[in-house]
Each structure stands twice: as structure tokens, then as C-alpha cells.
Image (cartoon, rainbow, N blue to C red; front, top):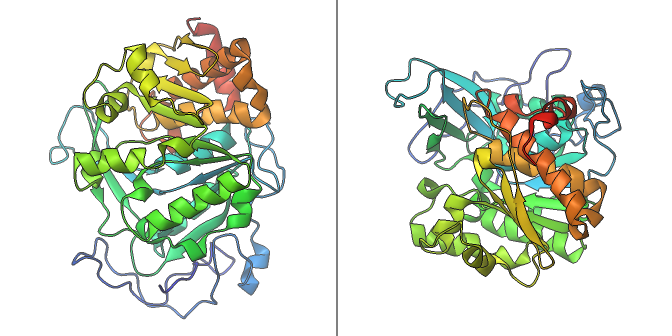
Length: 396
């Protein structure tokens, strides 16, 4: 696999790929970039093999976010693994993709959303994945740095483009997706390219299921999760069901459940519970408890504006949500995950203290609610101050 990391913006301007990328899967989604002089090879967005990179700082030191909270640290507390892509969201709701008059370009991808969400809340996060050696890939790398997310585990691939997702918005803000992954760069991450040291030093490793769909990323995903588990890192799992990406519903169910019992914390939606249990009632506690395995420390079920339910071996309950007018629900679940992981990374003892866990979940619910009030996932993720301001309106 040919691999190089494109140089980020520098004094001489943005460095483009040295040659137009080949067609992938019979398609080429963008006009080829103009030829440019070959750039020095670099392993990743965070490496310093390019002499010009000394002018560029990857945000791994403690800094201040826009709301005054601390930024990332030398060893990120939460490492998020998976896809980073571009969402194209219609500028109006309630129309099909064909009828949409225009689209808003927004960075996305569930694990990346979580990483940025944690950083926005003042936490410490890193992202591991792969994007194309193209302008969208550069944009996404820059976006991570601008949001104080450690991007040393982000790689650029010259053989495939950055993934795209076109999102239709119903009048109620709910979504349907059309993906362009044929393959996309995130699907081509290999085990040998993983930054295992970054993973082993984390407190929490967060991942989803999309990177389990195809090789070589599936093997890389399993290896990354195993490295985290072996190092005693808490494993967080959000299946993030996207049926159109799987070959069949059965394959999706089997794939999602294949790593279920390795997770310490699992977040699912009511829809995903119904899917995973072959149509059983997701609001029946006895059904939900079937998904609790011996290693489960906490199972969370999100219910949109109604808040969430929580289940552990010691206690269970429900925490109310914040009622808002939904514009775009993209990223709401990821914002919720960012909210709870930012709290857990600071204090794992929340898992044994129901009263404090409920407060943390109230915080996470507000994170999700605020995210649906704007279009696009990452642009809408809230700061800690925004969450604090909204908490007074949450139902207990």
C-alpha cells in the first residue's frame, strides 16, 4: 500500500499530491488535482519526518480551548478509532437528495465526532484512522488540529479518496444516508500502520462497527481493540448501525455482535436494540438486559429528546433529556458519547456511584440535545460552557 502524509498548510502554501490519484472501483469522484513536485515522505499527520513540519505544531500540549477550558495533553485520555469523512447535509429539510437545492459541507464520521466532542468539552482526545491524500483529507486533518484533537494517528492514503456521505433530512430532522466508499481511504487502514503506543497510553479506547465491514481495516480494528484491552484501557463501543454499508442485515448483526463482549461501556439506540434482538421490544428491560455480558460495566440506551436509560450489574434507571427543536440529528449520539466519556476519563469511579453517574448522564443528554439544533455534526458540537448554560432546563 503506497502511503504518504500530505504536508499541512505551510508558508509556501498547501502542498498537493505529487500525481493525480488512480480511479478507485471504476469511479473517480473529483477532478484530479494538478501535478506538483513530490513532497518528502511523512508517515502521518503528526509525524515530523518532513523538515518543513518543524514549522507546524500538532496540538499535543496542554492549551486553552475557545471557552477557556484546557485542551489536549501529551497522552490523550480518550483515543477514538474509525472513520473520518465529509457529510453533505441539505440546506433544507424534508426533501430527497435529488430535490435538495444545495448542501452544506461538514466534517463527520462517528469516532471523529466523539474525539472533537470531547475536546470541545475541555477533554483530551486523539483520533486514529485514514483519509485520502486529497483536499478533503487535508481539510479534515486541519479540522482535528484546530479542535485540539491529537492527530498523530491519522494517515493519508494515495490510492483512495476521503469518504463522503450525503445525508437527507426529513422534516423532523431525522436522517437517511447515501455513502461514497468505493473503497474510501478509511477502509484501507492496515494493522502495521497502527500507532499502538498511542492506544496503550490512553484511559479509554472508543470505537464503532463500520471499520469492521471490510479488510484490511477490520483486522486493524480488531488489533487496535486488543492492544487497548491488553493494556487495561477501558473499551467504549457504539455500534452506530448503518445498514446500507453492510452486505446484509445478518452480516451487520453478526459483525456488530462479534466484538460485543470485549466492551466495558456500550451505547446503543432503541432502534439498534430492536435490530440486534431480531425485532424485540427495545423498551422492555428484560430485552435490554439480554445484551449485557459478563464484562459490561455500563450499557446506555439513548432515546433522543426523552434522554437515556442506563444499566449496570448494580443499578439501572432513566435520566431525562432536554427538549429542543431538532434541525439535524446527525452527531447527536456521538455528542452524547463525548459527554459521558469526558466525565468518565476524569473519574472512573462514576461507574460505581449511581447518583454521580446520573449527573454525568444528564450532562451527556444535554450535549446530544444541543447538537441537533444546527446542521452538521462537528460544527454543532457544544462547548462545556454551552452545556452548563443549558443544564438548568433538563428534566431530572
